[in-house]
Length: 377
Picture 1 (cartoon, rainbow, N blue to C red):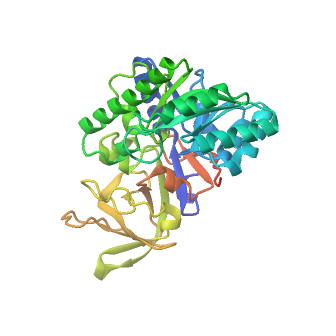
Picture 2: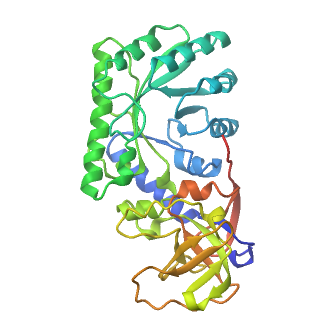
Picture 3: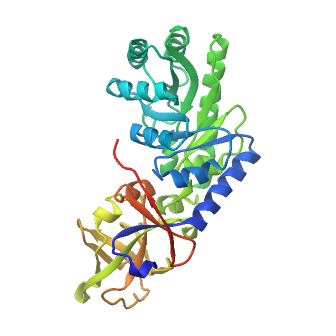
């Protein structure tokens, strides 16, 4: 089947671009002497993660237990669940460990550590945990100067049913950087925070086998990863308009898009109406704070070639409004009812979450495979 025979809206994945993106980051991190632990939250699909692992030693990262269960069912055993652990999820974690998963959790408080130890004791298992670090004030974690780091580390190490698996941090503020130099500086801070905290644990005779850092921007621009054992990244497989706006990738690197159809026009307003609304694209407007606001997505023809300055300027549940970017003097193309468009997403994770499958192409219009996606928690 070809793309022009698909019912729209639907999600398209270009496997050629996917493979190139994966190969580029693997090569980069190999030069820096560090392992890539790919994040499964963007793809939510085993076929993609199998490519991202590239037969290397090491495991993956997930953001939901549903992802952990799904990837484990497909034979991936080494998994880091990289969202602060909630007690209500510990029975599912215990079930995975009993089945043979090498599953680690993350935490940043003694309350979480005590809850973890109590539930692990009830199940008579050992649950490894990494201590989450705050390297940039973005979200969660312990700062490098907080004595809680050693307290939590000692608790995890000395308890019979928990293990101190290492430290983990995520430079989430890299998504808000305004220059490549700023991303590089934040990558240095990310590394320095993790390495400093690992050394601090060692000085107190505590183990720190994993020193884990990562975000797609910092993974692409880190200059030195000495002391780091692994880098976590997920969006790099697909990239998106936010990453392009940061200078992390080019528009041509974006491997995922939404296929939509023209269903009408509002000539007086300069609008083209499509069947790809926010239920297909998501409500993510991550480019609004960047130099170029891409609306709800950048519009291209069915082959993916951008159509001038056309973006999705507005979105209702099932309707997308396509128009020229504000201030554009480039004439818009004539698009007839039934013409198909490829819309590049602001945020690959958010857009992907609106769909249950990828229609896979190899750079052309022929669909070579259909890969399922999992959603939920």
